[in-house]
Length: 285
Image (cartoon, rainbow, N blue to C red; front, side, top):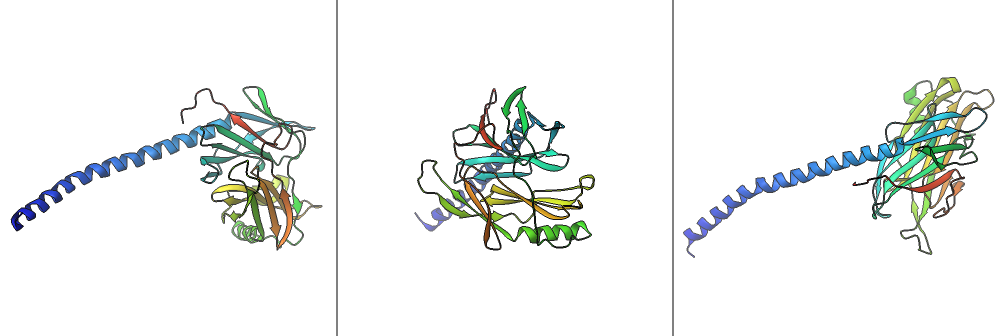
């Protein structure tokens, strides 16, 4: 082929490429929009799942716990095969009382996992059927003896809570496959911003925040910090609670202060931690 023919071939190829590029870009853009739409729909579907439950705190004065309308965290876990999930919460007033996970596994099953922080037993129902009924209190608060003097402004108190939270560190003993004999120990990463913050002057809570320790983006442990003005319990308090079936350990200043054992396949409806399969009538997501 002579030089003129080569040039004509180059021009024709370039022209065809220019005409083809917009079509390819449109298809790619459509795919992104479709994925974004499906992601938004899936989020709403997961939130609706959690909103189906009604929860009542047992005890001397039984009363309903309120569902926090928005997810406090969205996550995925490629290692364990969870493509999408959210953290939800039920509250006693404004204080966290239950943390829950709603997520889907590779097989398509939807899993619900809940951990109580409530000061007594509780009853969770769906369509008037009991799905979870822990008979005792969940994880509770402990006084932080060396907490700083509480700051006056909300901004400074947030800085204090971040500083306190940074003194905690954690690991989880994760099994990629449940049949694995040995777990792989992972260092958990604390998200720098609280996933929830609250105040309740009537209950003597000056300020409170929930920090998440995550594996990737999947929360394994929550640390809840509160400053209280109660005359007999004034000062900073903390609560640690696991959001996983695997073993977790938390240390502070290099000393282990709290742990939760592996609970895979060992959760019970009568205990403060429980996992179950959610079966909607028609799941297409």
